Structures are given as C-alpha cells and as structure tokens.
Image (cartoon, rainbow, N blue to C red; front, top):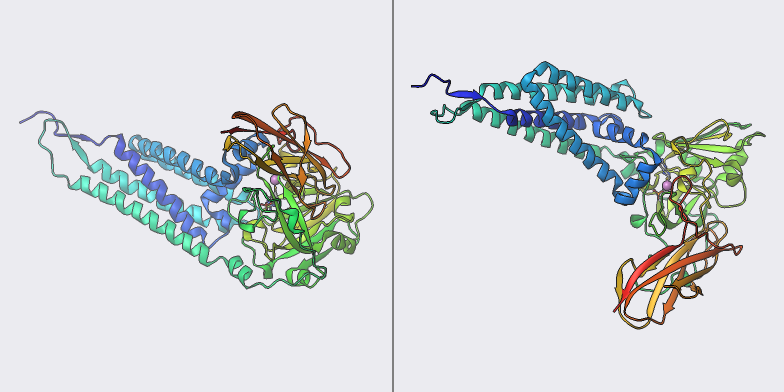
Length: 519
Ligand SMILES: Nc1nc2c(c(=O)[nH]1)N[C@H]1C(S)=C(S)[C@@H](COP(=O)(O)O)O[C@H]1N2
Ligand SMILES: [Mo]
C-alpha cells in the first residue's frame, strides 16, 4: 500500500523518561543499601554534605536569609531538581549512544564515591551503596532503552501496528518506578529502626545537678501578647549545623579525647562524665548568621560539666591559646582557651531543659559557652578537644571566611509588633528581646517614628548570660504607618552600635526598625 515504512523510532520523550526512571532506581537502591553502612554513604547525604562544606559564607548567609532553618530541605529539593533534569538529558543521550550515557553514569558514581570517601568516618566499604545503585541504574537504563528501541511509533496516516512493544516499555517504566519507591521507603524504615541513638536517648535518665540553678524570676517573661517564651522549648529551639543527616551516637560508644598541648592527655566516656559533679545554668545561644531582628537565638537551661574542670585535669601547657573542638561529623570550632578556663559557665552539656540533648542539638554531648557565637564554641556531637594555638589550627568556618574569634555582639530585637502588623488605635503594648551574654542588659530604649528615645520597662534578669525581655506601652498615634526602633545598653552601660553590618564575617549589627500601621 505504501512505499514508506509504517513506523518511525520513538521520540526523545521516551528516552528522557527512561533516563529519569534509571536515576530513580540508582538513588533509591543506593539509599536502601546505605541503611547498612555509614549515614554519609547515601548519595544524597554525601553530595549534600560535600556541597555544604564547599559553601562560601555569602551563600550560607543567603540560604539562611531566604530559607531560614529550612535551608537543608531547600538543598535537598535543589539537588533533586538538578538530578531530575540531568537524568532526562542522560536518557536522551542514550538514544544516540548508550555507551556515552553509561560512561556518564560511571563518572557520576565515581564523583559520588569521592564525596562519600571525603566524609569523616567513612571507609571503602561505604562505597557499596553507590556501586550497587549504579549497577542497578545502568541495568535499568539498558533494559528500558532496549524496550524503547523496539517500540516504533506509527507514521501519521499509516495503520497503527500492534502496541505490544509500547505496552512493554510503559510497563517496564512503571515497574522500575514502583521498585524505586519501595526501595526508598524500606530504606527509610530500616534507617529509623536501626537508629540506636533514639532508643538510647529515651532510655537515659540524667543525674540531677549537684548545684541546681534557681528558676528564673516569673517576671523575666514580660506580659505582652505574642512574645516568645523566656525559656525556649526544645522543639522550637533554632537549629543550625552542617549535618545533613543528624549524627546518631550511641552514648555507650561515645568518648571525648582531651589532648594536644597538655600535660595529661585523657579520654572520658559517657558514664564517667555523668558521674562528675554536674551543674546547671541558663544560657542564651546565638548564631553568627542571625540578621538584625532574626530568630537564630534561643534560651535554655543546660546541664553539664564545667569545661574549666576538664581542662584543669588536662593541665594546658604554656603558649596554648585555643581549644579546637571537633564533632563526630568533622565540624570544628576554635574557642579561646581563656574563655574556657575563666569563671564563666562554659559547659560540656548533656541536658537541655530537663531532658537529654535532643538528637539535633548534639546528643549525647555538646559544648555551650556564654558570650561566643555558636560557630566558635557550641560544638554538638563533640568527641575531641585539642588544646592548641590559633596560629597552628584553623576551624571549620574560619577556613571559609568567618572570623576566628566570635564574641556575641550586643543586640536587641522587636518581637511585637511584627513587621507590617496592623494594630488597633489606642494604647499599643510592644515587646522584644535584648542580649549581651556575659555582660547582661542594663537598659533598652525604643523610638517611635522620629520621636525621642524612651526607656522601655525591663523584664527581670535571670543571669547575665541570658537574654532579657523588654516591654513598652505606646499611647498610640494617628492612623497610618509608623516605625518602631530599638537599641540596648549592656551591663557596663555601653550602647548597641547603630552601624549596620551583615552577618559575615563576625555577626550582624545595627538597630532594628519595624514598620507597622495603626487603624
Ligand atoms: N557538630 C556541629 N556543631 C555545631 C555546628 C555544626 O555545624 N556542627 N554549628 C554551630 C553553630 S553555627 C551554631 S549557631 C550552634 C547552633 O546550635 P543549635 O542548633 O543547638 O541551636 O551549633 C554549633 N555547633
Ligand atoms: Mo551559627
């Protein structure tokens, strides 16, 4: 009937779908297998962690300012989108040359393998997930592209040929995708079931402090609707770290090595730590990435052992001026030795607000140090303290452009009203928070529009290491837009600087201004 062939090869769409499906198989098989190996053996975790380690300060700042503490979710989604697009292109490449596409998959696997090996606490065996994943992905691509090649579309006008090869391709794709989803789901439940840290944490009873701390005065909390709680509940406490998957440490396996420029190096296990005379203190933690008016600040009651005592036992040698603390996942912080040996309450903490540390906040042991931003002091999942010198060792963020010393800047914030809130006419109760850890807050002033700076009422002080709330009742003004500004004074009467600074390299500064409207 016709001289033309009645079919032509399937278009690029089918190949793109084959590529996407093979990538899904590769990643989910690797994810499933990774449940039996180090957490960082999962391709997504290894890639994401490596990406985070390569992140320059401006990008970290940007990510936190846009996504806040959802920055990790944003990273996973971005990686997912990039992988999805790349895999479709790979499928299309396979139409021209299967060998070229296979070579790309092998290269990708090698790159991921490199990322896995670059993580602390991984070894050659941790390459198993990516190797098995790559084999499964390759096999899937081979199979599906063979099925596509057999499936030839009818040329328009020609009588359609039987659609069985078509059905085979779609069936193969559906089976592969279902298999991938099942593998990913099973991998997830295996990882949860094997999470020994979770069960150990639930079973753990912490000792009580030898010296319990006095509860904060009731009027540390000012009475203004919408104010944050004076003590931040653990579930609301901000979380910032480079750990894409939270380290899972069995306390029975935990130990802390204290070494370096010391007379007596030693290692302490968890039991031994709990047997020391533990103390409690209220302390406000602050992240250097907190922008003016930001929420990366939290206040908690900590239970722990004074780092001063630990270092007394090690006896630092002359010339040492820094302690490099390292976490199980390779993060490190450089803290001035004198800060850890003077009489402030720098703690090796095991408890937070009456519970063992939550997993995301450093279970089983972390550091908390009054007066310093977290990146130079608050090492979570800490396993190593090296007494050394700033001249000799550089910590995680310091190599990425942040200052090696990170004292917290005197800051204040407006919590109520929120930006662009509309308040009813009449009296307006405003409130906020101010902090200058180790020095305390002596005064907070507010200014409405271009009016005079006026003293706010202060909530009671729990300690110089905690934030202090303020309250101000404004008589109210004309309907329309207004601005409230805030500034604080520390315990020595020094005023917060009005100079605006971004978080990098050593913390934001400037007075917060909040716009709101009346009426
Ligand atoms: N192991 C580890 N500890 C870490 C970090 C980290 O990335 N890894 N980040 C630090 C930073 S930058 C801050 S601000 C605090 C935050 O502590 P939180 O998450 O308990 O609020 O932890 C510090 N300790
Ligand atoms: Mo931080």
